[in-house]
Length: 320
Length: 278
Image 1 (tube, helix red, strand yellow):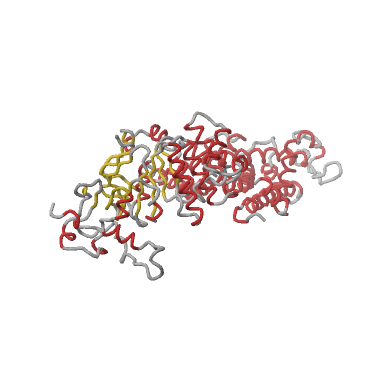
Image 2 (cartoon, each protein chain N blue to C red):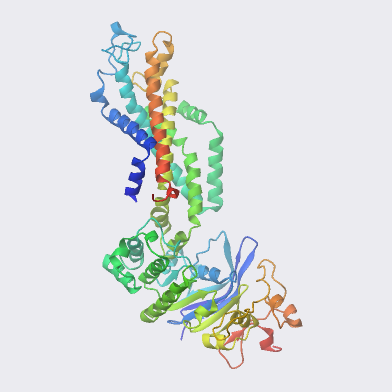
């Protein structure tokens, strides 16, 4: 199966610093697949999401190496008009905060129809209403005429989703779509995302800092740390038997119902300063099982033996 | 939204007073050919320098022309120059401000340094310089005032654009594949209309003053066509024997500028989104 989106050895830095926010990342997303991307704040996940549509300002960030192939075409070298045709069309995006990602002075209907106008051949009220219905908003005509401030957070995120699917995406990038919402609404939105993905046959890149949210809804999982992918594999396997000490730490810090009360183990220390990375493995200063080699040589993301999983850790790769 | 603004507007006495003054002035200017008691250009040398009387409410000038008629006709000049000059300034200032703020980088640096340089010169000096090379007539006066008063607005618009540029919905609009002109026109401009309206309204007062000053110096509207400024020029020569020649055009300028300033200040309060919905 050929990949829908192929990220090859992508590195990126913010000019101020310079902060090396994404370092040598390679990922693939296949048609219809759901890939989860987990990591702490500042691990480079949102930067990665933005650069996939070239939404970072060239005066703030620059790609230092690598390619992003969508259906074989390199997004990084695409001319502006083709890029615009891609944004909001074949690649849809849902942002973190639905309170700020809708334009407060335009009605919901106007904003959805704008997407239709650009990507689906013209404004069309019935179709806009249909999309509002697809994201299971009650009373679409009322929502259609409403301004964003008249809606709740969950409703707004549904509107954002409606706008994203209105362009008929093959790939939906959802950058922490539930972080700004109430816990009770989070689950609904994630279930809706999942259902839409199946119904419309889209691929999805679902980004979250809460690794637990990704467990049921993604086929594969990538864990990012300090701008690198440190572990990648089928979600169930990664979560069931994490092989990178960082992933293990992340999972241990999740509350579990079975364990009862008591203090949760937390990962000691802070993510590294991306302007001054430690030598060798970036996770070394926080790693409980670091040894000599971790100081000398940065580990590379390599496949585990006889497995479709890969991990960037010297512990797992012996003396290669 | 509009209903909310209207309610706030009606509850704001200063804004309301300003609006009444401005609307009356506009009506006066539009109807001036029918409202002025006599032809503003018609001389009557037998009745020159007459004090205010029932026949001439504001007296007559050195050539026996009716001052009331000249002040009313002058309103037309003042408002036309004020309005169009501000129109030019708004277009130019918005264009430069949005361009600088949205594009950022060197475009911003070049445009804003140019604005800084232009702001270093006293406006009246800039205007005199331009007028020195052009024929003084009403169109040139409008253009010159407009071309020398857009810098403040450009700064204002740039600031607003800079802060809007960082808002998520601008990024989201970009992520939906909208073209830059559409993002600027549909998603950015509506957010900066309010401060532009306020600045423009306040600007009209300033432009009226500048026009009067230019005409007073003989560089604006040319006699015999009346403007408040050039009526004052004549008044100056007869100040000790014919006070009405200076008082009435002076009052007209005062009321006009006051009216626009009140309206502008009022609109600032009315359009302020931080005031909430009460």
